[in-house]
Structures are given as C-alpha cells and as structure tokens.
Image (tube, rainbow, N blue to C red; front, side, top):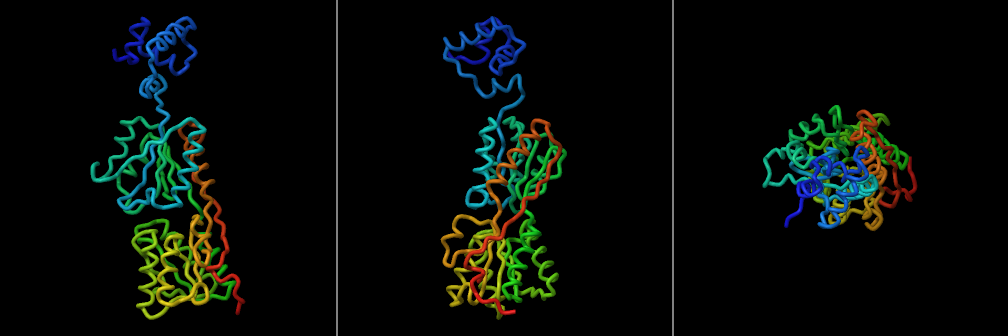
Length: 343
C-alpha cells in the first residue's frame, strides 16, 4: 500500500494539517496526538516528503540558483564555482538545499523563472550575473521571492546584491602600473553587454586620466565573454592594428591567460615586452608561466555573505542589502614587479 501524509492522517484520525504540524515540530499539538502519529509513521515506514513539510510552514528549505543571461557563466568559470561552493556550504549549515534552474532550449525563450520558482516553492534565490540578461530576471527580482545577486545589481523590494568594488580594483591596477613606470596602458574586456566588464573599463579609463596619461582606444578591446578566447583574439586585434600597449589589465584571469598565450605565439615576452594583470585570482594563476598577477576577489567571503544576506531577507531580519567587497591586488611575475622601475 502506498503511504502518504493523507494516509497517516486517516489512520491517526486527525487532519492532514495536524500531521504536517507534527512533522514540522509545532508546539500546539498534544503530546498524545504527537506520539500516536509518530508511532503510525514508524510502523508504516513513512518518511515525510518535502511537500509535506511545507504544508504548515509554507517553506521548502530550497534555494533557487540561477545563472542569468542567454550567455551565462555556469559551471565553466572557476570564480563563480568557488563562490557558489562557499554559498552552498553556508546555506547547508543554515539548513537549506540548492535547486539549479536551467535556461536551455527546453524551457521558454525567456526562462519564466518566477513561475518555476513558485512551482517549486523556493524560499529564495541567488542570481549569478551573465550577458544578455532575460527580462524574466527583472520579474523575479521585483517579486515577493527574496533574491541576492552576485555581480548583478538587483533592485526589488525583497532583493539585494553583492559584488567586488570594480571601480576601485581598476584604480589599484593603474596605480601599480604607474609606479612600475608603465605609461602605455591597455584593457581587454568581455562583451559590451557585460555590466561588470564595462564597470571595470570605466574605472580603468578614469584612473588612467587621473594620472594624466592618455587613453588610446585601439588598446581597449572587448571580446565575446570572460574566457581565454577573448584574450587571445584581443591580442591578435591589437597586433593587427600596428601596436601593443606596454601593460594590460584583463577583465578576468582567463582572458589574461588567453592574452599571454597569444603574445607568446607572436614572440612577445611577458612581462618584459607586455605586462599583464588579470582579475579573480583563480587557482590557475599560480601555475601559469609567468605566474599571473591579479585582482583577488574574496570568493569565500562573497559566497558566505551572499548566503547570510539571503537568509536574513528570507526571514525578514533585514531590509534590502547591497554589499561591496574590497578587492586586493596580488603581485606575481606577469606584471613585471621584479623589473627595475624607470621613471
């Protein structure tokens, strides 16, 4: 015989809602009734389903994970993998499981995230930035479901976001290049539809101008994404234009790694001919040749903060929270730090 919460209620002579309250440890049920229901559950081997647990509490203990955008980062980008791993651990400590939402072709063109989140009764969502973000992300952001964005600004009444200070990280890079004696500076970014890449580029240009240096447009190249091919193709475009900058800031470490590969194939040395600094401080930075200097984003801290902020939003312990995390410049070999500074 198939046993469900309705079966247990009928056998105990109580309502389904009473069984649900007992499953969820409500205190307004007599000890006698609790004992009776627990004994029936034990005899029948009934294990409460997630839906049974949510009948009384209206909470599923599920967190939706959404990689926003038609061009999204998903599990292929090591930065977001580390952030989500930290987020997962913290949410686990708080008693939640994660539910990953797909935006592949099997679903509606616009994802319809709000309807799907309501269907699965998620308690909240974490939304990871992407490119060409779907309108349904905004619909979810402005809904009753609490959401936290990572590297994407959410503005709903039940939403918040967390990101590194993209403007400050760009200034740190320019300041370091300037102190090293570099005056011809370039930038390789992701697609123009990436808000994060655009923030970093703007901060970089503003910082260059604040040091009284010229901005050469042919040394600012955007790729298709945050991966290696963008850096590789950007260097080829710069070479085709007839010149290379003396130092380059890449919007991600993977872009920087692709740029280093292209430079080496064309016979240029890093950092002797072109210095490079990436962004994220993924594990691979330590093992490139030369080791890649980078802007470290505290991935563990971002993940834990995202979990704590979302938990507070879900439990109405705080209002909308927007947190900016301080970046750190990590000096390795690729930026020429060991070279003699010539001012």
